[in-house]
Length: 145
Image (cartoon, rainbow, N blue to C red; front, side, top):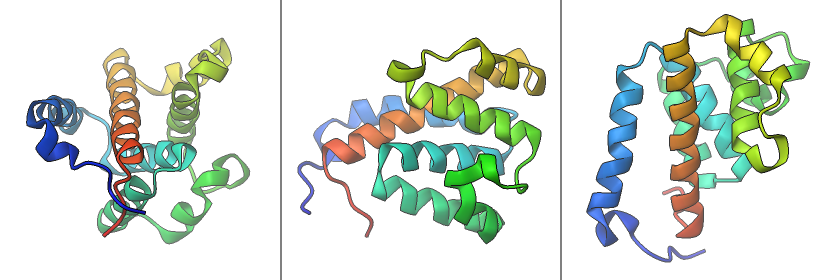
């Protein structure tokens, strides 16, 4: 598969805006391991090979356990994730599939006890950002190196 367009070169200002989101996420109180799990899970749902490759590698570099990475797609059926991580993953899936889920109250009830209002907002920004990156990479056929 060939890249359609180098979006970094095509519109540096658009990428600068995306990087601004990442800078805020980097300053948030969200744990690095949680951030990478969210990025990877959204990328799995969206089928973004470039982002899946990048974020599984980043998660490993941050010390993430291979077993958790291997079972992330079936996180509900494993004992490997904390309640906070489960809430974040449910939120991620619901927001990533927002046209199907409309983020039901049950998902809100799962996430709200585990995160402060600021953290929920930052978690939402994280999901928005990775879904944006997925769409850039998928639309323009960015593939792992």
